[in-house]
Structure formats: structure tokens, C-alpha cells
Image (cartoon, rainbow, N blue to C red; front, side):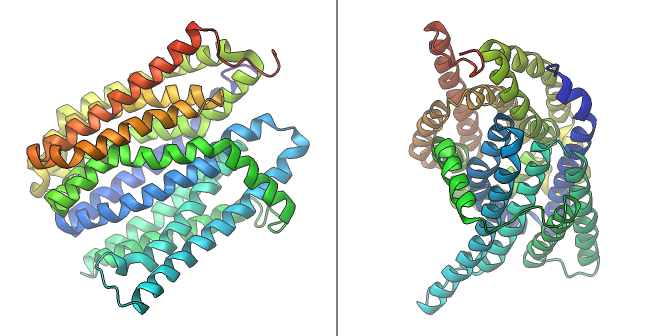
Length: 427
């Protein structure tokens, strides 16, 4: 297979799917920010940070290994592997919702009361439906069934956005109603995706297969799980410090700017869904030279639309924010330029992480995030108290630059000492 075959045969569907996903999430962020108001949207943003933390763990254990391990398996092994992994995902989703209910029940029984604790049951079910939908999409990407994720997201946002609009114009839209609508929409999208790939494509309870697959993913993702936890603290701790020190309004403003620059996710998510499997094939067949040649070629090509988009968003930010979000947010237009720098660095880091994951060198990713997280935890509080939102922006950019230096140092040392792992075929 030519190295560009995955892009030439599936690129259009994949990019269309990511355009729907990113465009839908962008519209969701705009509507919630405008209709809930900056303070309630800040509360939504704080709750969603918890969702992203669990999503990071989920991707580290389930979907990142799936995208890399599936191409390396024989055709006769792939079906049993996918059956077992999907069964494991079902157990995880059900267990997550049950755990949220259990913790909430114990808190009530012990007389513990908290404004945030009251959201736990709803957030548990939201997480269960959200993570299952994410898994089904990655399942389809790994099998190159690009049409299914696109239709799942089309159904998701085709239901979610109009429902929120109806609630708003009926004067019934609240934070609770918004979260419940998000939960139900993801659940319906998952049901549609499950039916499209065969209704019940797995034999859930093959115990030995599930245990074997769970162990295989644990060994692969050991460093990735740790990485996911420290990654969240690496950048998000500054956002947590902003919410704790500056309040929900600051959290809402920062989330608004992230949502603006998040249009880049069209390409970022396409990279995460398409490139890992192809990068693994390149490394498996051609070694590290083929891997780096592939990533360099695709990375340079992708940098053009990313750069143009970030520059355009920065220049148009004052007008776009007033038009999309309203006058309440216009004074925060400068945040878009800072997040553009964060995303530009993030693009380079994504390419480097793909290289290391393809070679099964995941420990440097963990080490980089560990260093960055440690410094973030120590510096976030003082920086935010001293410089406010400016301290948050400096911390986010500094965390990305530190990661870049760590990754480049690792790759340079490995290449200088000629210790990069070779393809199993070439060994």
C-alpha cells in the first residue's frame, strides 16, 4: 500500500466528519456561552474540565492503544480483539455511571453537601454516554469505516443544537437542562453508531478474551495513563487556578477563547484519528526512517491550514467575538492570540507524540508531562494571583514550550546514539 493511500482513499470522509464534529462543538460553545451568560458558562466550563480529565484517561487506555495495536495484529486476531475491547468499554461505561451514583449516595448518607457534588449523578451518566460515543467513533476509524462517525456526529449535533434552541426560546434553558440535553444526545448518537456497525458486533462476555485484552492495553498504556493524569495538570492546573482565584467569569472567558481557536480541531482530530494507524504501518514496514519521512511530509502539509486559520482568528477576534458571543465577551478578544500560540505549539507536539507512540516509546511523553505538571502545580497559584489571566496565559504557553524541549531532546539523543527501535520486519 502506498504511504499516502490512507489519506487519498479516506481523507475526504474523515475531514468531513471532523468538520461536523469541530463545527458542532464550536457552535455548542457559542450558544451556551451566549445563552447561559458568562458566569453559568464558566460553571459549565469547570464541570467540563472534569469530563476532559476522564476522557484523557479513557483515550490513554482504550482508543490510543486501539489505533496502534489493531494494525499490528493478524487478520484472524482482529475480530476477537475488537469484540473483547468493546466488551471492556461497556463494562467501563456502566461502571462509571454506577460509581458516580454510589459516591453521591454515600455523600448524602454522610451529610456532605456541596454545590458541585449535586452535579455528580448527571455527570456520571453524561460521561458514560460521552465516552462510549468516543470509543465507537475510534472503533470505526481503526477499521476505516469513516462514514459511520460522520453520521453519528451529524445526528448528535442535529439533535443537540435545535433542542437547546427550543429550550432557550421557551425560557427553560438552565445549566442542568443543558447538561441533560448533552447527555441524552450523546446516548442517542451512540445508539445510532452501534446499530450502523451491526447492532451487536461483539460477544461481550468472553471472559478470557476480555481479561487478555485488558492486560494487553494495560501494558501498552502504562505510561500513557500516567501521562494523561499529569498532562491534565500540566496545562489545566492554570485553568483550575484561574477558576479558584478569579472565579467562574474568568473560567468562562478562557473557555470562550479556547472554543474560538478550537476550530483547529478539524485537523487536529483528523490527525489523531487517521495518522496513528498509518504511522504504525509505516514504522512496522519501513522502520524509523519511513516513520519520520511520513510524519514530516504530512506535518508540513497540515501546518499550512493550521497557520492560516490561527492568524485569521487572531486578526478577526474582536469582530468575531462581538458577533458570536455578544458585548459581554468582547473585552477578552486578546485571549484568542494567546491561545493561537498554545495551539501552534500543540500542533508540533502532536506530531512528535505520534512518532514516539508509533515506536512504543511512551515513557518520554510521561516524563515531559511530569516535569511540566510539577512546575504548573508549583507556579500556577502564585502566577495567577500576581498577574491574573496574564499569568494563566504565560503558564499555558510555557508548559507547551517545556514539553517541546523535552521531546526534541529525547528524539535528538536517540537518533544521535542510533538507538531508535527498528521495524519488526526489518529486524
